[in-house]
Amino acid sequence: MGLEILLQLVVTGLAWGSVYALIALGFVLIFKATEIFNFAQPELMMLGAYFAFALITTLRLPFIAAFVATLVLMIVVAAVLEMLIVRPMVGEPVLAVIMVTLGLANVIRGLTGLIWGYEELQFPKPFSSDPLVVFGAVMNQAEVFTILATAVLLVAFLLFFKYSSAGLSMRATAEDTTTAFLMGINVKRVFTASWAIASVVATVAGIMLATFTYLEPIMSHAGLKALPAMILGGMDSIPGAIIGGLIIGVAENLAGFYLESYLGAGINEIAAYVIVLIVMMVRPYGLFGTKEIERV
Figure: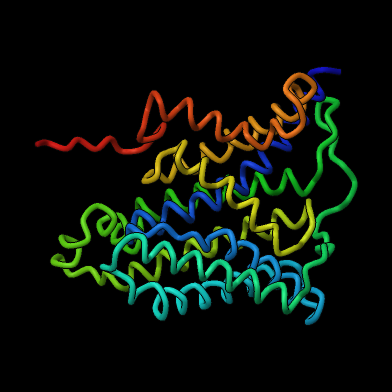
């Protein structure tokens, strides 16, 4: 019985970790390309989930059609936000840019609440409510599909960055923006593309999260767990964002079940930060981050 419970906890942790990983991936993509830390990333996740909800419940679109339409819509939204709000801030002090993204996050959250309200909404379930039983462990189908979707996205992004010309341009810009510009790469287009791709992964995370929880404006708070995931994996590492998110998701789920009776309620909420603190004392640049050496 203990093994079945452990397997169930790990699967649920991997599902939550997949959400954290996708949001952290968006953080890393924007940070690598533009050196801007986008604090509005969790709100983009939440907004995408609400768009999908509206398309399914109002326009009566099938889940797959609504899913694809939402991704396209979020690409447009992210591109407009980057060009109108973020791009003019390039070159400005870091604190000013951070405040702009924080303000953008609050505006998105407020508008979402005004349009759809602040109460919990039940997202239309695209998966059967019948549980999956694997080796005696009972698993939610939505959680399993979330893990599979994250795995597919990870492979797709690795292939994109390794073999596509757009991916190579983004990697070159991330390495050295000035050199990339001198080599003829359209840096502004790369900046917009990074925001668009980050919005896509955030939207996938938001829709997947809504399928096994609820839809509400404060669901963006779940995206805050992506911050320790990104720091744990390394702020400039795409594989690190994925692995860091999965580690955080599994660790907090196991801590909540096994340690709560000993350390008190809420231990799962701080487990992520305890892990990051321990790792940062050993590897300040994260598990897979680039170690910077400054010569004086």
